[in-house]
Image (tube, rainbow, N blue to C red; front, side):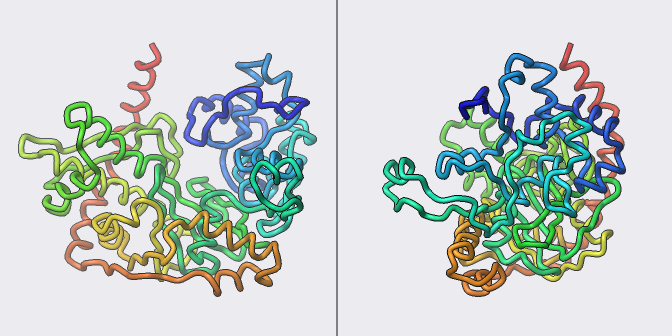
Length: 417
């Protein structure tokens, strides 16, 4: 934002991969180990800090006008309250937050030469950050002075809406991206940076995330690609074809790296691939391979969580993937865990509402809000025979990325020519 809080340019989204060189620069200037020890994460293209550096390098005329840097929901907050504020969970995704202090890292912002005054004040998720202004209240038809709470990032808010506030229960979200989300009472860092460690919206708690950049996005890509030939093709029709296809898609594997990948590879140049395609394979095989490939990627993240000592008793499914009976069963069979659905499907919005209830005094704390409002619906159990089959197939899946990594780099270079 400029000095009058006007938007300077369109936002660069979380899945924008253009900031690879800036990630290298951040790593060199801060130090790889030091960065993870402070911010909990390596430099990745989706974070805010490399985007600020990209703007400084490539659009200096825009950079010269910057006076404030806000995350999207916090820009909405500014319109509601006139206050510059963020919450610890969302701020942790900027790469500028000191996780232990739950505030901006003086060291990182100084090394990267990002003015501290550009950054908003950081609050805990249920804290009140301001009140609805008269102008905003009149426009929205709401009472002036209504409290506006800090809230959380989408996944952290969803964790409140699904009850991920204790060890042993994790959530699996299959939207555009795929996310495994686990609560932790203490900071747990992956020294290799394969998992994200962020502040939770529960005060003084933390969470770990494994992120697959193209989950539902991969399924959407397949549907959109086919719609050029079959305009009326629906997701339900594609799922129906996958249901008629044997587990493992008769030897066809899909790598879902259509936007690069975060967990476990941290590779913006990784790309998607069908491997094992033969004349016997048809559309149903391709659809099933896409759905299975996404869950194989989630399983990679789950393995790293277990490496770090996290227990797993139950997976709670949210997002578009939770609405698909087939995708729920695939998660149970591939992850080897019961998959539970929630009584309220819109986890992020529900979680934000519960946080607001805490901030408004309806509940004494986040745990009380979750106990009062969150309920599960039904559970899908893994099939032992299919689990054994997917164990073998996942071993093959894991061999493919290392084998294709040089090819991904060569193809990315060729695409730039």
